[in-house]
Image 1: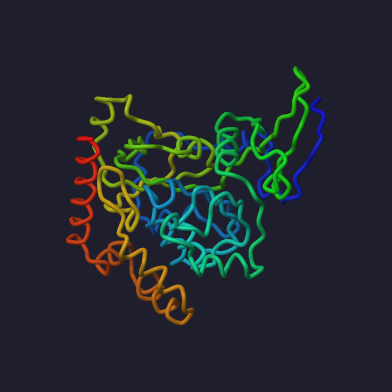
Image 2: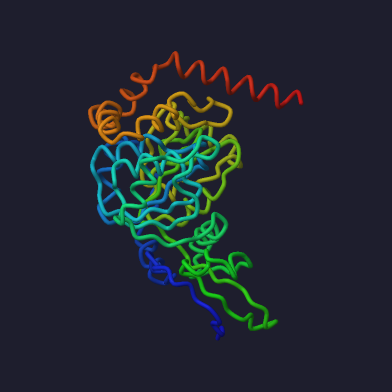
Length: 333
């Protein structure tokens, strides 16, 4: 038995019971079958009102923007959101007010770009119940779920207000008597991750840092993959060590070229800083922002129409050239 010496005051939005999660995963279909569908179909099938939602990527890097747009476009409501290293994805979802509960680690800020005026308004409106964490503690929560455990210990947040407003517990180690913080497992009902390549079954490759996406993929009950390009299964089999998310974790595969735009896709294209500034500027005035959302999300049929509005393939090629220039410069240095 652990001796609990302190407990956070925050709400726990997901039951950390590993045996209950195991009951779900025991029934999950792991067949090697074609899972290709449109983004619209994937969101309709796997994202339901009241679900706990996890989004992959880091900041505005390698985020599944198309999925976030479609969740807003389909007007999903009452979701719970994992605000883990979340910037433009949070900005999009807050714009649609799709969630009313949020586990907070990093939200509202778009890093060096500043704070999202609308996301801040939404979080200050009283419409969202929140629980505080850190990026590391959220990563531990996903890792605990991926390992099939109800919690993992850590040595961070103890003695801070973050702990006070979390749902973590501080316990005495039964071996040493020293204090550790226990972080409860988190199994999202559905998660979306954007990758560089996938085959029709859901075997995925990605380049660059993976953050907590590999743990998120293993923790999520349902997993939607968007990819820059579909590759033949022979490509996967010829070099299986590059597969970081295996097919049996995946429920939907959506081919979405440039699917992280206006975010950055490592080795593919740079972030569109001009368009991100347009988002921020539009948010300052609610009426202006409503028209912005109508133009770019609600009145567009899909992500391709959004890309066309933002400059289409010419704009992407400019961003691709910028990314390659940066990569070449880093390589020389």
